[in-house]
Amino acid sequence: MTRVLIVDDEPQILRALRINLQARHYDVIAAADGTRAIAAVAAEHPDVVVLDLGLPDLDGIQVIRALREWTPVPVIVLSGRRSSTDKIDALDAGADDYVTKPFDINELLARLRAVTRRRGTTGEPARVRIGRYTVDLATFDAQRDDGERRHLTRTEWRLLELLVRNPGRLVGHAELLQHVWGPTYVNEVHYLRQFLAQLRRKLEDDPARPRHLLTEPGMGYRFQP
Image 1 (cartoon, rainbow, N blue to C red):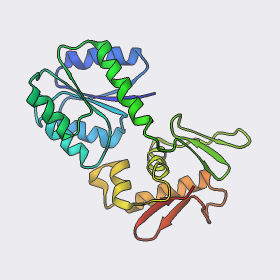
Image 2: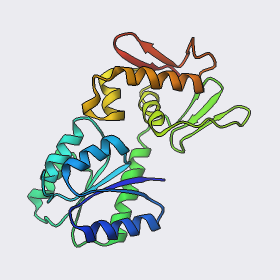
Image 3: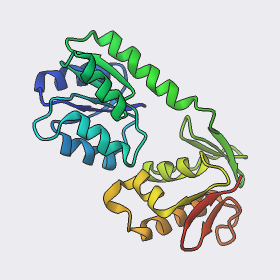
């Protein structure tokens, strides 16, 4: 289920979008200002953000720039600002698309489908082998050769996804922490030790001697296919 964060200070817009998206099987969360939006991206890990520019605390452009410092989550601007300057500023800040109000819900749904397709077809590996498990990032499925499925938490999937999509590359502590927990957690290295240990217990044949989820002491972690 695709998780969408809606950021808008108009209650009627939030309500209408929530009803329409949930009816089409989206998982919807909402924020009424920029500060809460940034916190929600860090805590809830949405797949897409639908963002108004006219927020009561931060301008939407500021929100986009803040997000782009640590996450590639797709952002669709949904705004009453119609000038080409506003559109260019939003896209230059890192927005993926721009829809003006008033809007057609079917157009917005098409834009949502498009950005999620682009995110899922970047040429990066979606299926890998880890020990006796086939791990599918597209369907969030980890299945052993005998058919048994291993449950991973949302946090474990986020951590595993970043490593798997960078095969053979050392991914530093700060990058992992920002990707999974947000920019305020860049010093919480003990989180990584805890969750990597959990992933190894669940997926590696010998967690004490991992072959795929490797530690680079003092630096970060590496996925070895």
